[in-house]
Length: 112
Figure 1: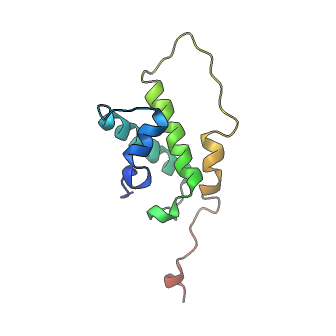
Figure 2: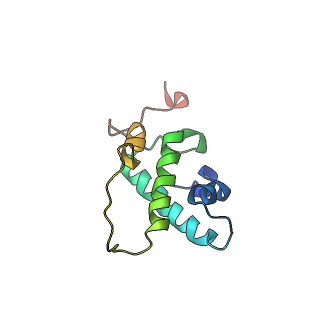
């Protein structure tokens, strides 16, 4: 994957989602966003996701949810809280971007 996460989600948008009004954590935010992108691409396993224009808004929204989770819970263990998955969470948002056929349709220029 050669698309930088900041091409999909500008750092200003990531800060806005996290409600961060300073630039001090930008390197950390980008690291979490890169991790979210890598996981989402693995989960979708869709070779059709190559260009920035190939990524729907639902995919980008899922990245923001993953980023928010990583930024809010920075440790491997959280003590003293109860959590549950949101009904329209990450997996629901990525559902339409998943590769269900096991291969991608040939691009129009590749057709005979």
